[in-house]
Image 1 (spheres, rainbow, N blue to C red):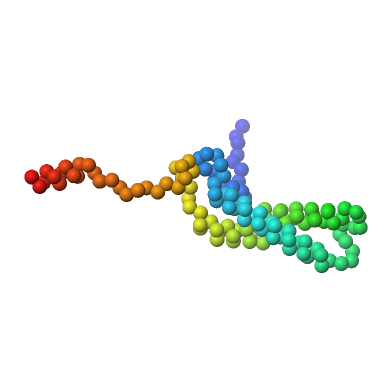
Image 2 (image 1 turned 180 degrees about the horizontal axis):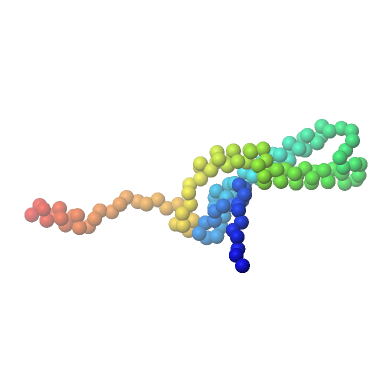
Length: 131
């Protein structure tokens, strides 16, 4: 039995840190997709208010609730696909501000190397040249 790797969509988290947690980039990508879904939902809700006359869902007691859930789900599905492209544009803009993660950054926070120490043998050689 051969196991085939799954192909990843453009919205799926692609990288995981050494600790098994999603990377900052994958969390940012998901946040951008979620933001696009919220924006699409608000747009659909505003558009729905302008409709008059014959309803798609008929006249029932739970119509408003059902319509709200329907448009929210459509918004989520659109943002998980290509959507309007807003999530991708946001991701490209904001991802330039994320520093690449390495194992030592994840475990101990951002560590910046200090100035290099002098070679201890260099001091002895200079001292020997003076004598």
